[in-house]
Image 1 (cartoon, rainbow, N blue to C red):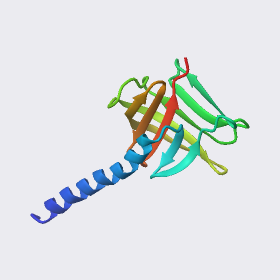
Image 2 (cartoon, rainbow, N blue to C red; image 1 turned 90 degrees about the horizontal axis):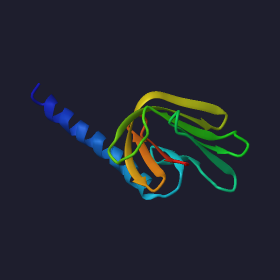
Image 3 (cartoon, rainbow, N blue to C red; image 1 turned 60 degrees about the vertical axis):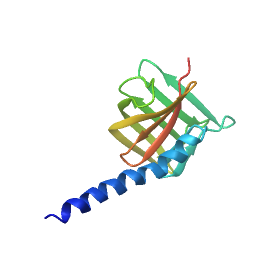
Image 4 (cartoon, rainbow, N blue to C red; image 1 turned 90 degrees about the vertical axis):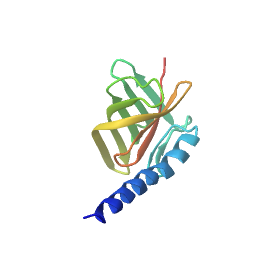
Length: 133
């Protein structure tokens, strides 16, 4: 029993550090995008994409012009400062599938101008959104 506790502690430390290897590259980039475990799933291109924002619904959307590919984030509150914890629902496309995670905890990792970087440990997903006013 005494040997199990140190192993569990080490496992928790390794898991926490594992998250950091994905967060740092995510917040170091200025691109509006959706990433999962370090892999970019969608990147905003101003020539082929649109962004939308609804303050009342606290909803952010990035989509291709033909609306075939997108990510949409709806939050419990407006993200305003680094370290803020929120819950939300994220929907996104991958190929011909629509994926969704609901009632997930998001942490605001960075706020720069009108851009906001959010991260959820659930799935190691990062999303960059923009407030349009």
